[in-house]
Image (tube, rainbow, N blue to C red; front, side):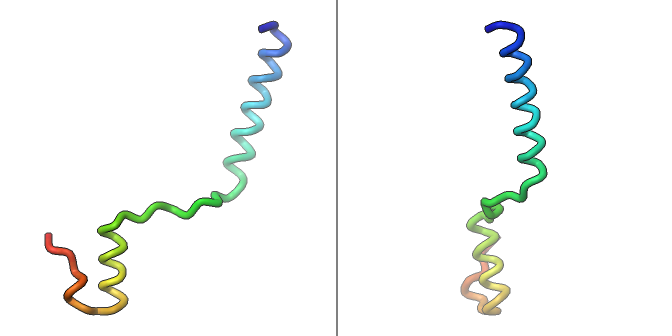
Length: 53
């Protein structure tokens, strides 16, 4: 790979990373199964959904 192409490749990668940081994430944050059960138990206030620890 020649020098000019390598330099352009590095700059494009840097621009891509900076744009990714500026744009919001389109994917929702992962919530574990235990957290989902606990949040459902808090909403319903039903003791049958509470996980045993």
